Image (tube, rainbow, N blue to C red; front, side):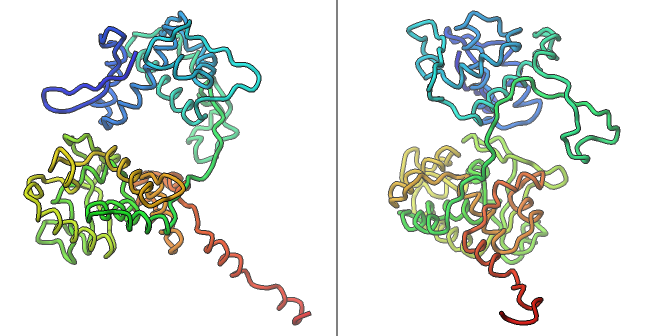
Amino acid sequence: MRAFPVQLPSGVRYWTVVDDDLAVVPEADAFLRHVRFGKDHAELTTRTYAGHIALYLRWCIRTGRNWRVAAEELGLFVVWLKFGPKQVTGIDRPASTGLVHPGPGAEPVREPARIQNVLTGVRQFLLHGITAKAVPSSVMAQLYEVADTWDLPEQARGEELTGYRMRPRHRVQVPRKKGERATDGEIVELFLAARNARDRFVVLLLGRAGLRPGGAAGLRREDMHFMPDSTALGCPRKGSHLHTLRRDNPNGAWAKRQPAAAPGRWKPVDHLVVLAYDQYVLERMALPHGPASDFVLVNLFAEPLGAPMTADGIGELLGRLSKRAGLSRRITPRMLRRAAGSNLADAGGGQDEIAALLDHSRLSSSEPYLTPAPDRLRDAVNAVPSPRGLLGGAR
């Protein structure tokens, strides 16, 4: 079992699951097509789900279980994921039985967050199978249990406080931790390590505007409204800004969230992003293949020349820049995005403003991005007034 990309005659892509004979698994394919076209999710979402489902089906086959009713033993699946090395859980057939025998001191091969994500994908797959009557309805009780709502905040209990809710039976404790952000110094080093204007623009686009790599790779030139007044373009927004539209792009780029009441999410940008874009446009238009594509980010010096960059390509670019700059760690697009959110907080931005600028649908989604700079913590402590005035003078 493995995840496999599919491109339809229209050019739209999604991922499915095929067996060892490269035959499509019908139930998995039906679920993934529902995710892609029924729920209008991104191609990358189907790739993630396809990988989760492939792991589950692989476990069932190699341990002699019927995948339709194996949900009751998902706890053993968790053990298989946690301790099974690639030789056991990978695509290639294992040399032995494919079983996992964890012992004292065994080192996990997957992080809890990764295992929890796989369980979520498997549950969604089986729930879709129940709806489509491909999986027995009794499996629902194997996936979920009835739990009290006493530990939920009042706002989450609904208007009718029944006191019960459905909770997954099989869960993994995922340590809550703040996500790592790129420091301002690291962003400067990445900027200086870039050898062309396009790469410098990418660093600022993610590090100051807070774009996701999928949103950045899907930008078109018509989305860049870098002028004081865009009325002539039919846009009422004032000041320099850009729009992130959800489109089916040939490079697989996908804007994560499309507002219901507006044609596209707009995002204000500062003068540094505008200057970097102007320099990039001059560099690009000087090349024979520069003007050909309507995409903003294109391959200028690597094959295929003029083709739009992919979201994965942006991540690989940051990896190369991190290495070239001599940084002690690899800077990822998410670390730059967290830096953008944290810098907004450091500058006094409210959580509602940060959520809007980072395209979060809920305020709570912005919490992992609010990693304050150490200097701000020191300033906060120093700003607390001294109690000496309450004691009638210095002592």
